[in-house]
Length: 162
Image 1 (spheres, rainbow, N blue to C red):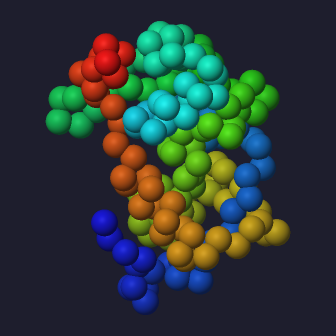
Image 2 (cartoon, rainbow, N blue to C red):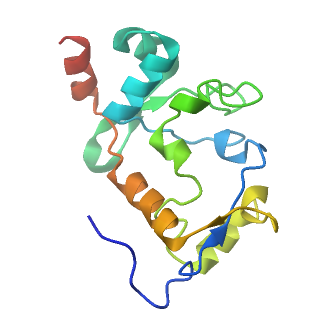
């Protein structure tokens, strides 16, 4: 795992401002995937009180992924909102890593141009009075996003059958 970015030219070395405005931009409005890791699935099952089999059946779908893999992802509503979105995340305290680490995803914080482009859609990234996240906090979130490996179909089937 890569440590805190030491690069003096890192555009977020002095931190970035972000405070969620509850606009739901990152939770819907356009097609996308919320991939689920093993820890994500366990937390969501804990939050709903459902078994893995029940949760997967009710809230999940299979998504094509890199290297020809099929992985677990949350369902979307017909309007592309996350299946868990109901005027806010219905499982906020148990939300997946992908959701917890937004907007500090590796590809978003790779450079200032990408950050600025995404911020046009996310008012929380433009909030003048937003919380100042330190470089260390941003890097921790970036690393969590990178390490969050979604479960494959075979891995989910093994969990269900164990």
